[in-house]
Length: 281
Image 1: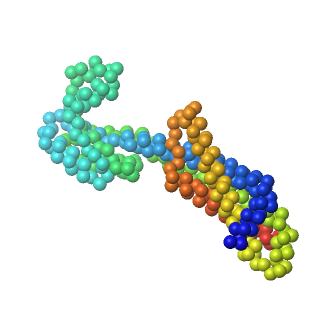
Image 2 (image 1 turned 30 degrees about the vertical axis):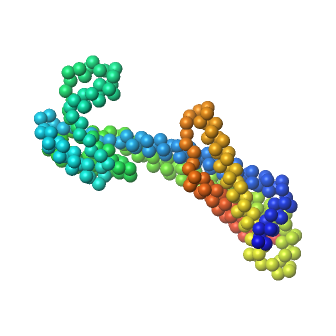
Image 3 (image 1 turned 90 degrees about the vertical axis):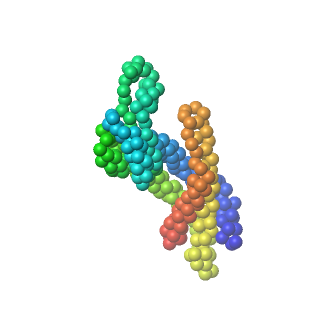
């Protein structure tokens, strides 16, 4: 309990510095939280687009219906396929008239080919997998053509990879900035207590004993900064929903991880700063 009491005494001894430290940490994590919120919503938008990935295999006219039905059943059992639905010529015509209502007259009396429409399982929608499934479907002798928007899928997958890499890099940058800021605030606390630390050393206190209250302080500041950053992020998301566009907020698991992340970088910033500056005191 001694480290907790010492950390509390440090807070109480310099409330202005402690408040400034927590606020600075909070705004650093707030910037990280805003970026995380943007990354989360971009990811969800990309996932919604991925849900629309579909392979459409057109059936040659005159193919016996039982052959097509058997093929659809076989394809549905592919490990990558979530569903394989048979679309008859009549259904294809009605779908075209519904989706392209302004050109309804064009389809009057038209004959559209039947097809087998495939939807792939989550995690199986990358370009290589989609192409592999499409090539396998083409092996059926009565399949005239297979369409799946190859260029669109490649662009979508490339965009998702770029967004993921950018998110990781910027997240690490923001985290690094937060650690530096926390380390700077702890350094000020160490320097402010330089005389006290020197006396503690004279009476035999070890560096570990001296370091513990600062680590607890950094941990506590990280937690408080993380909570405040999450509150600010929630307020920003609420305002965006009200005045700009509907977005989603972090779920409970991410909120807990955000607080733990704040505590971690608070602890890390304290450890780095104290370890460096105890040697100078």
